[in-house]
Structure formats: C-alpha cells, structure tokens
Length: 351
Figure 1 (tube, rainbow, N blue to C red):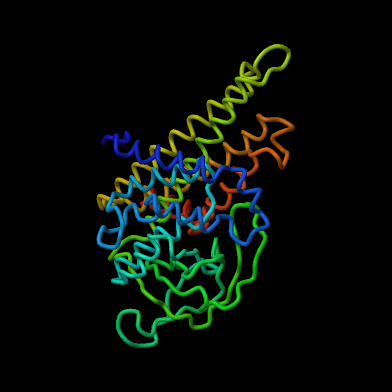
Figure 2 (tube, one colour):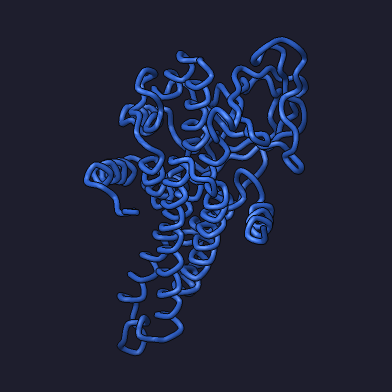
C-alpha cells in the first residue's frame, strides 16, 4: 500500500499551508484571546472560498468530492499551524447534512455562511436522540448536559452520540455558560438541552461520522507532533552553549530522535487508518482508534519535550511552545476519552 502523498495532494497541502501562514499566523491566537471567537468571519469566509470546508463533501452541494486521506492531510496542516476555529465540526456537519438530504444546509456550511460547533454529552456519552414519534428525524429530540467546543457564532451544533451523528440548532440548547480552556485558541462552554429538536441525523450504517472525526482529529495531532519536532530540532541546531550547539548533547539529540520517530509512527498509522476506513476494511475502527491514541501521545509527549529543550524561554507565555501542548491536550480528549479508546483497543487485541 502506497501511503506517500500524490502530486495533487502535495498541491493541496501547499495551498492550505500558505493560506494558514499568511492569514492565520500563530500570533493570532494571542491577539484574539479576549475575542468571543478565535477566528474572524472574514478569515473563515476566505477559508471556505479556498474549499477547506467541503473537501470530501459531494460535488452537488458545493464540495470537491475528494477522499478521506486528502482531508486528513488538510487537517494535518491545521494542526501544524495551530489554526483555530470549528473546522472539524463544520466539515463533519456538512457531510451529515448532505447525507441526510439537507442540501441547502450543507451548501451553507461549505460556503462558510453557517458555522457548526461540536457538542459532546457529559458523562459516558451513551444514549442518543429521544424518539418522540414520527419517521426519520421527525419528533427526535436531545436532552442532557453538553460540553460545547468552538460553538461561538455558530448556527448549528454537531452531536456525535454513540454510532450516530446529528445536527441541532445552537439556539435550541439555551444560553451556554462559557468555561475557561487551557488552550487560548479553543472556546469552551456548557449548555443544557431539554428536548432540543434534531434537524438531521446519520447513522453509522449510512456513514461512520464518529470514526471520520477521530481520524481527522488524529491528523491534527500528527501536525502538532511534526511542528514541535521541527521547532525543537531547529532550536537544538542554533542554540549554543559553551561554543557548541546544544543538539550535540545526548539528552537533547535523543529527545529529538524520539520525537521524530513518534511523529513518523503517528503519521503512518493515521494515513493507514484513513485508507482503511475509506476502503471499508473490517478492522477500520481498530486502526482509527490506534491512530487517535498514537497521534495523541506523540503530540503531547513531543510538545512537552519541546518546552524542555527550549529551556527557560520555552516556559514563557510569549513563546509558542506551550500553545502546542495545550492544543494537543484538547484534541487528545476530543470525541471520547483517550482512556476509553485505549480500553477498546486492548479489548480488540485480546480477541
């Protein structure tokens, strides 16, 4: 199996990387820390015009109809550039809307006119919509306490409950209560849903939205792991002590080597999982969960090592090193606790 990116994929990655570097430099996170949203409407619309929100969506709703592995490479660049905003929920939300037959809503999301936030149920995540009668999503409602991720300025929320995914209107969950997040580029809140009406719903039999979300989140974590690896290596080559680069010291070069190996393993596993999920392999869920766990550990451990390699400056707020660690922790726990993913992996391996 050839996991190397094609020329088309490299062109896509290059265009996205250039856009993020020019329009959303990492310093934007600090500049907008006090703003309600971490990304401006102007930049969000510009990203939509570039096609970032509809890469794998069907062409009849304004998408590009490309494969999942293409989208993983895009999310890898989102992670590498610490790009803020509800990209994950919006991309998945557009797919849910399109598959459920809500073409107008899907077009609105892909064009950037409608943002979608992510809502995760408090507790073990069990349970889905309550069916109050009717067919399809007619009469289906959601109740319970939810954690909201980047739900500011959104019109809809994506809820991934069990093996199904649905969209609800943000206003249906009442007034959200903001919660401080360790990552200044992520906006958190909690909200109570009491019979929120479900707009549209897709089951795992129609499309594995939860697994797609996990592999895209893994792609972002891979980008984070690669970014901190490169940052640490560059510092090790240029920072001198006693007339020599600090990279000649074993404690430094061994740490950089470990970061490189972990990032490469995370990339390979994530791309393998994306291809397996796209192809419908029987072990696709196992491979996706493995990608999320491996990429999460690579990002967190690498970001922590990067801070240490940078010494005193790495611990300052003005340096970017801490931002990678904070973002890594947020996405490591997104769409289910990492401990639960690891438990399912161990159960599957024992069978």
